[in-house]
Length: 367
Ligand code: ACO
Image: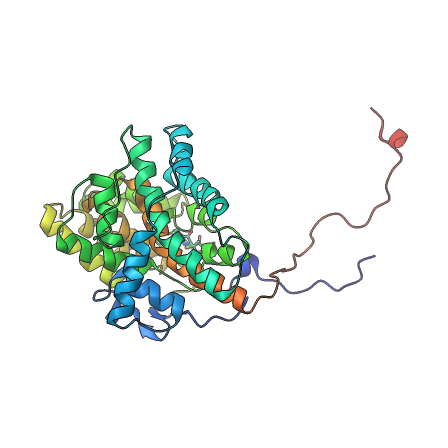
């Protein structure tokens, strides 16, 4: 007989407080704060390095600290030769997120601080990971497309170097500014699925899921299928009629809108003008209007991130890796915080299987 009464539980851990954090606060009414700073003020002004420093260390860097931190990251970008060799061995159709997961896993074996979980060691590992996640993405992409990985440009920041390593061209200042803003918007989001997984063990694989980070790749497929704003409403009504999930809409916490959407929408508008691709924003806006009317659901950041990445020239398969190149800062900050006050995360599950039954002798099972 069961020895405990059937407990209450929350499917998907919705609304469950699974721990404390001082890193990030998501306000369900469309707010987002890193270490007490409103993301709306900071995202468009700070470099990604500045935000990563804040997430990891709790305070903004002064000028000297920022220069040092930026240089430390730049100096750690190159991958061990064996990791480059491993990337070459993967089938060319391997998804960039699977390359990234395998690469991060392999990098751990080369990390001299692997088994040291002191605060200082965790910060050192964080710097290396922030630096190398980007390199795994850009080198992995070039290698899987039959090209050579390019040498690092240590005078470029993470955002600038990402463009350079992918395309072989030093980007313009406005492109770097835009990618910094995007990285800043994605850098942390308290106990989202992949960060929660990071605090327990594995973040990259979790981020790949289509209901989480993978949504920004799926959103682009959806927008391409729709094609023009006048087709958006009928496309959406058909999908809703067959009860399909619409990528780039809905959120576990935000119910009044995703705090990151207004900035991402403006970037999409700006890029539309610069690139002459002004169709995407009206398609997204039409989808927003109809989703609000039909389901009272708001867009999330991935709806606009998809065309933004597209117009910045990135292939859709790199949408989720780009998210990872930024969220790695938040993962690292959370893992460091977790280790600083470690308690094994071990939830319970609700048993819904058979009642207790006797074990039958094999002769009683026939066959
Ligand atoms: N399209 C259509 N209907 C939706 C959507 C959607 N995108 N999101 C939620 N709903 C509906 C559900 O079907 C459900 O309806 P019902 O009550 O009639 O069954 C209701 O809204 C509540 O939805 P849940 O799935 O219970 O909400 P939950 O908190 O579990 O899901 C999630 C949140 C996973 C993000 C969901 O909204 C979703 O699947 N969205 C699409 C994928 C996506 O864009 N993910 C990115 C999230 S943001 C990020 O990771 C950066």
